[in-house]
Length: 591
Image (cartoon, rainbow, N blue to C red; front, side, top):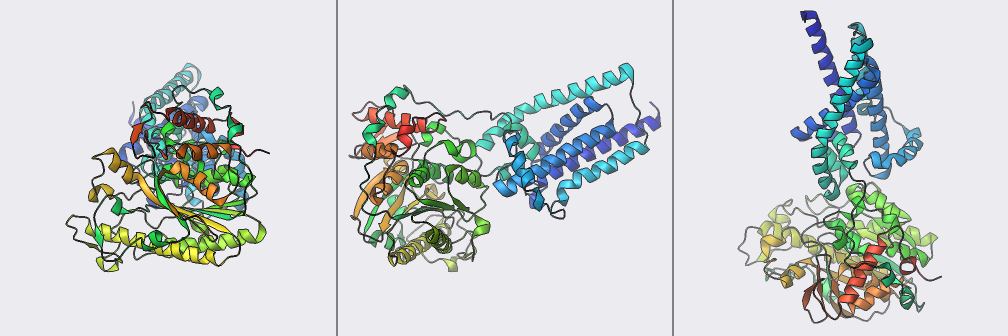
């Protein structure tokens, strides 16, 4: 081969690399990760470029002309990047093959297109134009006859073989996708093209069917139809408080001031502890169980909002909307986290508020999360707005103040200090307990606001999990009793009208909403009434595979007990509630 031909081939290789890499950058930018555009793991960067090159080869097999391939490939990548940009901006989710139906929505909002803001997305096309002109100037040889057919076959075979080989890391990546708290994080580290490819393998979510499941066993829903016995119809506020936990359950740590004084002293309240799915994390799993009363046991390690269609499961939202409530949800963080922006909408919340909607951000020292007090003040404003236009309101808030880590502030910023502690986590403990102290004060302030209203209001606050430092400061795993206590987050139900104050003890978080609605006196779907009946004998039916009876004895689901049938029927109902074709009588109010 002559030097001129070698030089030409080198130029072709260089420009193919440039066009592939530039379109990778454009696709990455469309995931709103501009600040970390080069943060892809080296091995996954290679996978992503290889995958785009495979697509380029397949396109080349069709056209057999590199300049035509450049036009087609870059056009496809640019259009895909634009669609992804808008789908993420307006719907909080990454665009994949499974969301092709969202194309219409994406184009409907393109009338707000801003060229300056989307310059990174057309970067690939600009490079493509340069590439095309270069190829024309270089007079790329046009293949004919058998030679052209041979080249097409090589291109196609190369692309298919590359994609086949990449299916191995793609299948490994799908495990990350199913559990990661935000798709954008996955795209930053593993790359958007590979995210698209890996998502193609997520054709269906395997929900574990309980042993012996039989839909005929669920025919008695009429026995649990709620009678309308409401004396008042209160507005309902439900708060899932990030990492809200009482370390005294597992440790003897003493502090210079009490950090949950208001929680334990507040009158006219029902208190207790709600066991969560995991210890030290996975907020969305607790959130799913709280809002739907279903169990994560059937999902294994899957993250609910990432993999489930939340429009097909009943929840506190569907129950209260059938009671005539206007519903709103709020979380002072990006709505794309755990796919909440889509899942809240699918669940039926009339209004959804996320980070950009919160005003007057308040922080504790150098911590980067909004304080409970600031979140509650925003919640009050939205509640008042909703109350002015609607007779009954249900508001749900997921807070963020107490999120890990706990080493942001200096020692001087601590409001609570541990005493007689000899471990290595003193600074983290002081910051964490100071956060809990602020949560306690903020909830007291919230109840003081609602106590002044004439409209009856009932509030429930519960923690989503223990802090991630729990195992550093406490013996957690030495017994089933301690494991259960490590999952038991405090809850409180308070109202601005008379309640029967009591300690409810330990229940599982999937039973908290039925308890709240019972205290509120509003009609409950048969599913919730069944759970309340079950709790009189088995207050804890945990998604970690254990149950606890009223005597404090802990058993496995598979242990034969007097209440085994009751527990397994709950699992059948939870499974049925996650099916498109469910026993509707259990999950709706009787008309």
